Length: 292
Image 1 (tube, rainbow, N blue to C red):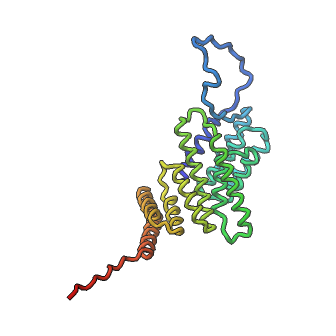
Image 2: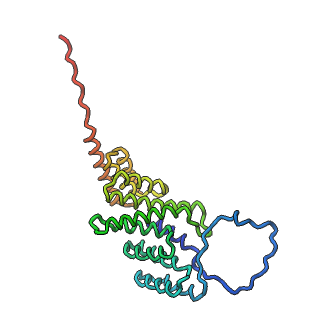
């Protein structure tokens, strides 16, 4: 799923490498040959954040170029402190958060996510990534398990509420942006399914994983199919479990992921054995001996 989230991040961060030009002398535009389109006619797109001064823009570039995650986060904090009203604060934190996500640094993801949400509480991508990171690092043995689970659920629900209101960056095709929103929805439902599995709530896990698959049908994620198969096995829905285990095998092999493919084969074989045990072979009815 990471490469798809990277695609989202690239589009969400597009158009930010600029600063507002001020002090330019306005020129009177030439009269148009045809009436210009009204605001209602123009498709809505997000306003690209801008630096207000060259100094702010240069400070942003310097912080964004830092590769060490710890130093980059510290530089972003310093940037936010120096330019507390900057439109580029979320962009900078999001850029570093993406790097932390790629490196599986869950603690840093959560730390950076909280900083983004403090500025922009409805940021869908951050809500999704935060929910995923918290859910996947929470264990039943954690003393604060209930609180973490509740937070992950709340973040996921908030993301679903705000995904539809996302505005694409300029020059992003509408169909491409709809696909990216589908990826975010899929990640939310996948997180819900994962949490349900941890609670052994396999019925709701099945529903969530099916929604995750349906939300992003273009991406055949073998892990989603495998987890769906496990949930279906636990609720004794053996036929669809075998079907989804086979889909997991096919997707994993297509993506050269032998580890998931082997797990899916083991799950399929287990379900097949359970299915055979649950449906014993019928014994033939005794025949009536012929009359003498």
